Amino acid sequence: MAPCRGFLLLMGFLGSMFLIMMFRWDGLPDMRAERIPEQQELRKKLLRETCDGDRDAFTEGKHSLDDLSIKALENLIVDDKHCIIYCYIPKVACTNWKRVMFVLNQTEPYPDLMSTSGDLVHEYSTLTHLNSFPRPEIKVMWMFVRDPFTRLISAYRDKFQRHNEYYYLNFAWDILRLYANLTNPPQTVDKAFASGVHPSFYNFIQYLLDPRTEDKQPFEPHWRQMYRQCQPCLIQYDFLGHQETLQQDAQQLLRMLKLENDIKFPPSYENMTSPSSVSEWFSTVPLEDRRKLYQLYEKDFRLFGYRRPGELLDG
Image (cartoon, rainbow, N blue to C red; front, side, top):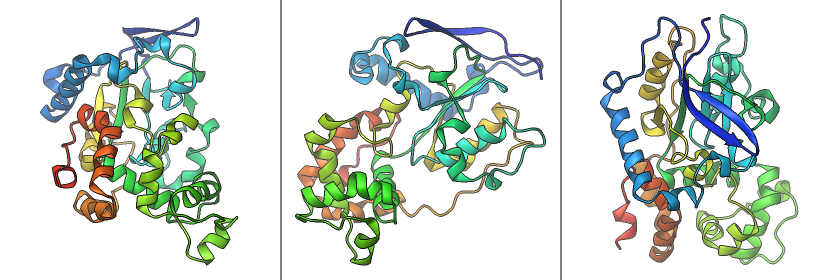
């Protein structure tokens, strides 16, 4: 494989310097604007304009990647073999994209994505992260996003309606105690499930809106705002995918990477938290709390082109 060439961006980091390079493989055409489908151009144009409109608010006062901590870069996964970086966001098809990053580091022909365990690719040590990689050369940087409210519903269903010991002990137990008026919730997830006890969706929203949640520690990644995980106003992304158009975007991205004949992205299963069901989920959430929740995630809505859900917010 021909090496990557061409400097794009110089990044400083805690006294070290990252040389981030835009790509060109021999024989691969440049990624000029006229070659990128209109939808991608519109998404990136909106992102740039929104960032430029209030950069300090979207970067929380940071002016460059020099200002980010090591932990702030942990979502950026590097594949130096193919010169690509993927910023993953939990609950936005990240398991399958992590599978892509994992199998690309195997020998060709690449194994089928679904033969790779989801548990394996979520192990931090199985993938190379930017915060541990001194000088990556980048061919393309991408991220996938999702309607913020739909993503919250998916996070709730996955972490609080399923048997998950970690999330019960670290989150659900406190949520039940603080917002469900249970002074002594079951001590184990087994006992909780046996008695049918789990936080309601509204309890979860109350937890998110409680100022003590953010004061205690940053939001857990499955419900942390997307812009805070991938820093799109500090990093120039070459591809911005949406969960709502996952299959089309995945095919387009693999073509960009010249991997469409080597990697077959898995078909999407039916989304049980589709936008059409959002109103039903939020029917238990008072109007004022819906409005507060929108304010909490408004930057994600604005940056990534998701419409304000007026049917939930306007009474």
